[in-house]
Image 1 (spheres, helix red, strand yellow):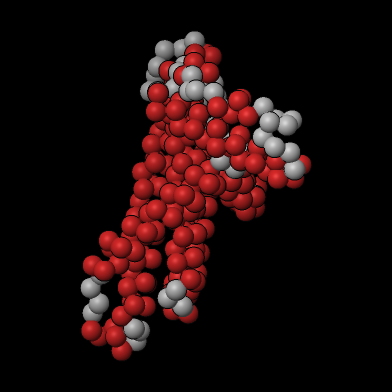
Image 2 (image 1 turned 180 degrees about the vertical axis):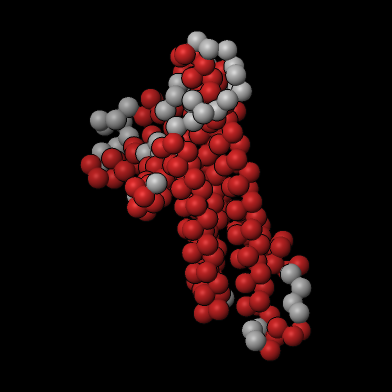
Length: 241
């Protein structure tokens, strides 16, 4: 127990590192693009509808209050969505572990979970969940501070970072659900296969851009750009990562 608690910071940062480096950081441009779109929507649709209580105007301006409330709405919505995805990931992970245990031991289902739940994986899931809560809460407080300081670039920057992080960890857990489906059924559903293919292509193109930038070579020399334009093939995607 003590060793698990003392290793908490490393476990939390390891989860963030895995999300950032997944498929050559493919989740970064994907999450950033979606975050920009969502930010634009909430600013145009939700912000104007926020009602400001007159008594609060003695403390902050109307725009500051709207910024604070909008940031809180994004935090609650993002955390709620992550909890739903995390719960589904956790449940499918337990089912996958149980199926693998029964297959390995050649036992019939008994309903017990004592033999196939690994303590290290359970702790890893728990700390991953608290890592997201801790990091997003820090982002919430930071965004609130930025709202009070500036209603322009700083506020929008803090909101964008929070959205980016939520979308990235949710996308990473979606990938994890697909891995669990593969462990249970021996094949990923088409949605998860296509999602993995999409992330893989983004990662490959991102690495191609980076290599081209540092080497100064075109996409044809010495890299074969055709390999990055292969169509989706479901048979090649049903492999655990």
